[in-house]
Image 1: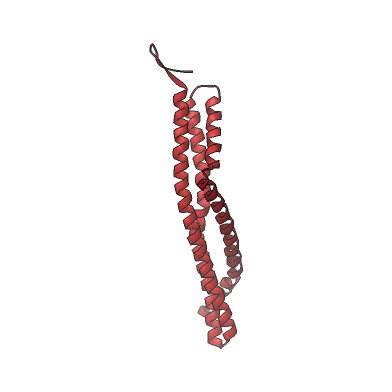
Image 2 (image 1 turned 90 degrees about the vertical axis):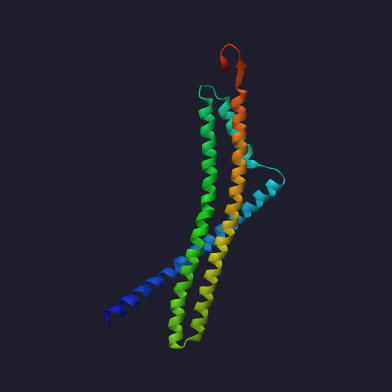
Length: 191
């Protein structure tokens, strides 16, 4: 056996081993995307009804930070704002990751069966050729569907995030101003 044939055969076997983890990962990502789409639909319905669960939770955390005794109210409020923003952005990161990983897994799920399909074509095995082509095209479609759905969800959630951050920032400013009252002799005094 020629050295290049050995390398080619080794790469083909490695790719053959990878097909199952790729298909499983693609199906798992599809399931996660469907769950994410359901959560997105629930949030969309709540927002349409003007129920802002995330905002209400953040308002409560800001109110708790403002009610705590001690100096540096502005720092406590800022920390609470940053923690809320970090949590919310982290939830967006999963959708953004699916936007990138979906097509990659779809492409891998396409190319691996295509190699088997070409091998089947060379040997005249039409049923194997057809089966591998169906797998290849299905992997492409699923990978792209995951990407498109995740992109749309992430884009709309990004807009919601900006709206929510603006509202909770305004609430934090309101809390900060309420704690300050004008005092003619000392400028502003904190109550």
